[in-house]
Every structure is written in structure tokens, then in C-alpha cells.
Length: 159
Image (tube, rainbow, N blue to C red; front, side):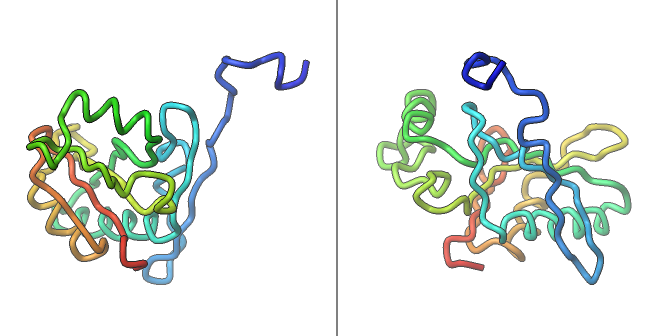
């Protein structure tokens, strides 16, 4: 059966492609395309984002003295997904937390990511303010005051 006969079904292995980045002369891979996909299975990611995430992860591990996992909570968004978020959290120009000009939109080329960090051994969340501080080393823009504890990073200036 061809793919047309499977419309609406989850495709096994979709976006399970490892992303490799060279950090400090070593080839590392802690992320895959699947981590960046939106609710529709679409992925668009700028090359600077996995590199920045690997550097953030490395620095957090060093700081903590143990393994820290970076969990991608959001990356690419469609206009519809953005409107749905705004219904829930409100637009920033109306006092909410969702930007009408979100860098998560495809027109920006996959430059944005929302993350949380966890201590691998316990699953405990790593402090948002520490994650934000480290993200500022590798992302052009960082916002780390969301009530749910996630950190937004984007490379809007082409880093």
C-alpha cells in the first residue's frame, strides 16, 4: 500500500533522524528531528539551534557535575498553532505571553526553541534562571520568565 492509503496514521520512524553537531572538536548528538516537530509532524530548524542546544547542555552538565537533559517543549509553529496558544495565554500586546510575531513561525526559518532542563538521575527540573543564563551565551535572544518554567531561545540575528 502506498502512503496515500495511510493518511492520518502515524508513520513509524518519522523524523527519527539524529542531529550531529561538532562541539569542542567532538561530534555529539543528543537531539533528533522528532524533538523539533510540531503537532502536524512538520520540522524546520536552523543549523544554529542544535549547535546552541548542545553547548547549553554541555555547560549545564559541567555546572551541575552530572548529566542534564534538554527537553524541547516547542519549536516550529503554524499560524493556527500560534492562534490556539494566544487563546490560552493571550497576546503579548494585550498583556499575555504569546507574540503575534513569534520567532517560532516558519517564516523565520526554524530559529526558535522552547526548552526545559532536567537532571537525568532524578528527573528534577534544573532551575529556569540558570538555564536562561547559560542560554544567553549561545542564543541571540532569551526569555526566561515564563510561569511554567520553560526558557525561550532564538537566533534572530543569524548566530
